[in-house]
Length: 232
Ligand SMILES: [Fe+2]
Image (cartoon, rainbow, N blue to C red; front, side):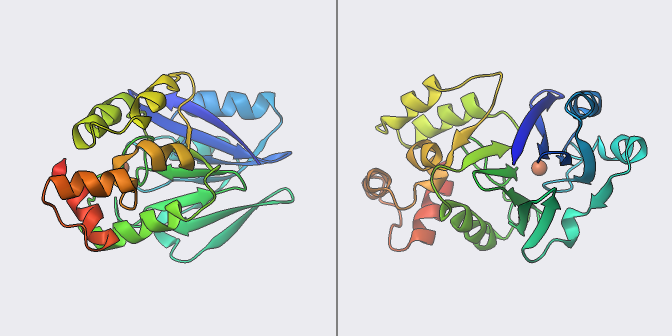
C-alpha cells in the first residue's frame, strides 16, 4: 500500500492511499492535486472518506464524489474494525474516539492515517469530553509496531515541540525530533512519537520522574496521562 500526502489550507493534510490501481481519498481537501495525482498514476479513486467529520477535513468530499465514481465511507458509521479492499490489499479502519466521537484511524501494513487523534508531536483536543475513551484510543495506537509511519491531519510539529519542551524540558529526544522535520513531507514513526510526544510518554521513565518532581499523580498509566494533560 502506498500513500501520497497533499497539503491544503494553512496546515491541513489530506491523503490518497492506494495500491496498484485503486485508491481511497482521505480528508482530501486539495481536490485538484488529488485528482491530478490519481490521473497521472492511473489510480481509480474507489472511495472517499474522512478521519472525522470536522469541516476542515471534509471540504473536498463533494467535488471528489461528483468528479469520480467513488463510494463514500462515512466515518460516523465505523464502530468496529472494517476492511477496505484496494486491489488485492487490505486497509483496516477502526474507531478511535476522543478528539471527536466519530474519529477513525486507517491502518496499512506500515503506516497509519490518524487525523486529529494523534499528531506528529502532540495529540488532538478531547472535544468529545470522554478523556478515558480518548486514552483507550491512544493506547491502541501505541500498541502497534513502532516502525509504523504516522500521517496526521495537520502540520503542528513545531508548535508541538515547543509544548513538549515545556512539559518535559530534560527529554533529549525532542531536539532529535525537531531535526528530522521536513516541511515538504510531514511524517514520523510511532517510535519517534513514543520518544518525543509527551502525551504518549505515560509509561516512559523520564516522564514518570518528571511527574513525580511536579508532585503529580503517577499511580496508574491513566493517572499519568491525565497528569501530562494537566501540565499543558
Ligand atoms: Fe478535528
